[in-house]
Length: 205
Ligand code: GDP
Ligand code: MG
Image (cartoon, rainbow, N blue to C red; front, side, top):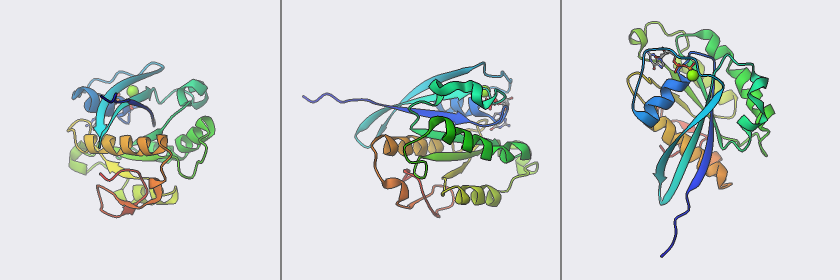
């Protein structure tokens, strides 16, 4: 009888305070959404087990309060990350403008072996608000940012309505697994879930 080894994958979620990082994690892991806003204190993680093909993986998803100074998150927070999830709110321009900072800071702190292939995923959250009428960042603009940062896979999500949350995290898990296994599937141009366009990303979602 063979013992199945479980692979632990560390995922880090970054983005401005209030964009919905904690809500997305709660929706994915606990299938719950709360309107109440509680700023996350410090850094913490939740875990979720899932099967990808014949592999059992445990996603360890690290959350933080966005308003913390980047540097104060510390090296331990970033160490051993297998995937970095960047989140912005499609209704708040500033949360999109700061993506560059989060992206750079991750690369600086986590210092991955090959920054060109390290998996990032971008989530544009809160697309439910006002039926989309209050959005200020277009999908096109978000995709352009993804393209100019090495074809980062992009998902539009609603933690509130549980829209695209499972698909996004499955993509995240697959990208993290590919990174952990050192596979070079990140550049295979697997079709992206939302647009069907060719994108980088270890996710045949
Ligand atoms: P964080 O600071 O990034 O962890 O953000 P939170 O997850 O705490 O969410 C901030 C606020 O936005 C809370 O009041 C949430 O209920 C709300 N929120 C989060 N995601 C969504 C969403 O997809 N749609 C809507 N309408 N509200 C959301
Ligand atoms: Mg939070």
